[in-house]
Length: 555
Image 1 (cartoon, rainbow, N blue to C red):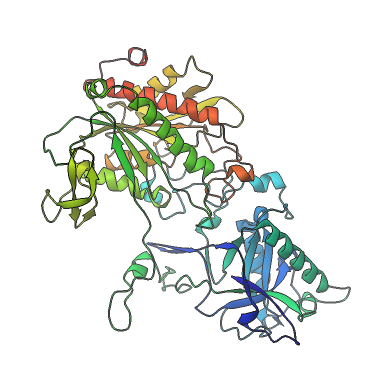
Image 2 (cartoon, rainbow, N blue to C red):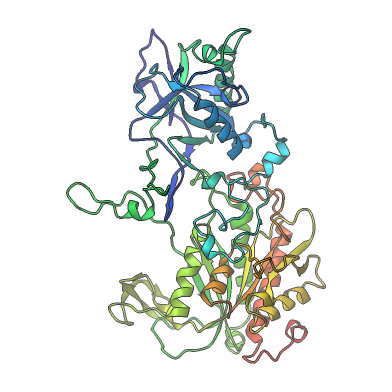
């Protein structure tokens, strides 16, 4: 994305553009279609910069006929005003007009040629600035109803994210959008957009179209070349033609496979406490596992600007601190517990729990390498243990996970750094996840018991059974365990929220950053890590018949 100043004296061409420091809103393909932004084709989309409030449906263009032509424009909007409602207002206004050719031919789409989202600034929309600070681009039901992941979520209709507006799930094909990350550049562009909007302000007796057609030259314009793949076509049933399968199966004209998108995911990390598992496959190792887990990725409308201070980084730090605490216990002591403690840091959880489902499927359902369970030498070498084994198909960089025993329960962590200026944490799920037949209820009692004497307390969350009989689980790796085990194995989630995310959680927003004012309570993270570590040891201490009570295990 770039900006340029064009005039009749200085001919308009791409050589006059200057690249801006920015992060693009990308397209994400899923099984049912696509979500996100992008240009209509590989051709650039260009328009002059106008303040977004001058080109929204509030400045009604009712008098415009469907054939009224206006010069192409790019809407400039502050990051706190970038919401689903305001994008809809921009699109509604633009739908009243046709695009002119002042900045080159327009083969597809209307006069709205893109959106510049500016860092910094203050809200200028209908909502208060505090409301917009709290907004999340995810739906109110994250990873649930209205998303491609709804079938993977326990309690998919429950609104955890009450400040979510669903912008992340919108298909904005033909509306390239970028976040201008530099505040000085943003300030300059904000002034340019305001000045150019003032120059086309509608005078008494003028129509909105007359205003838009005024003062075209000279103008500061922006050019987008963010083609993110095809879209905009549907079947007779209304289903989108282009989806993730179509994108990954793309073939060039010569018939060679040439996928047009990169698969989601990445490398998840897991490790055990105590004596390291052998790098070789040992069939018959049936010592059960207590899994301590969290997600390690975040996302936002601008994929490369996803700080995730609350919904990712705080979780990672909590588990790392818990691992350090457990690591201070002698290996002989940990090895003597009834279960093995395993830590899981999972990638791709924001997109259908990719990481946790992959590991749990391999461990719970069994994994077979087509070359045999011995596999091939891995690229990884373990200290004092020689070379690990890997599998080329299905690709696994290390087969040591085959030595993990059955997962007996899980302690998951989510958003423990933002407690809403309180010192209360919450324990979700528990025995509702396994019908009281497993370890989940015990883990819930232990977490609450262990917090009784600390500065930070943990109490049972108030979320109960819904109309469908399920108890919703916050979108965490625990959802994968409960679903894949058909509710025969469960666990708990330790969070900083009760029945909904905190008002300023900024869930999956680029504003979820300490530099943007996100609340990060370091003492809460430390307290959560201590609770998790002690609870994991208590869970591993429990015997197979669940004969040890929570009070004894917590002593």
